[in-house]
Length: 155
Ligand SMILES: [Zn+2]
Image 1: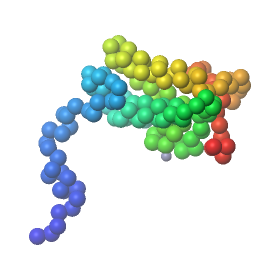
Image 2: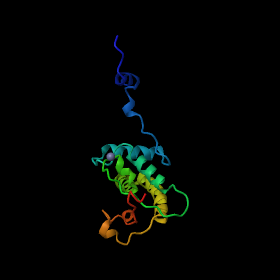
Image 3: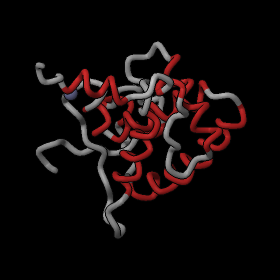
């Protein structure tokens, strides 16, 4: 008898009802809000919004603000525009959060907004305003894009 391919094995082990299992709870958010977010992510027609995108956005936002101390932080341009790499630019993570917040029903929206506001306050503290943002930043109507950014070489 031929050895089973890994895919076949996985299919055998995955219960038939796996698709209906609730999504993993997002760190810091209630199960209810996590479910509402999962729904928005699944139904979104936006290429950058996909299951897990909100969780990833929150993680990237926290990671950006992680370095201790008072030294200013600079968002970094990401050269690859795919929906995975884009998250390495914290401003993209913030774009995704704004879009999810916009699409959520009132209660889960309020809960996610509370989380985001805490991070926003730190972002404002740790980054510097860019007085020339309107000339050089894409989507400078978004306040989180009006902060001084670093170039990848400058690290
Ligand atoms: Zn990429």
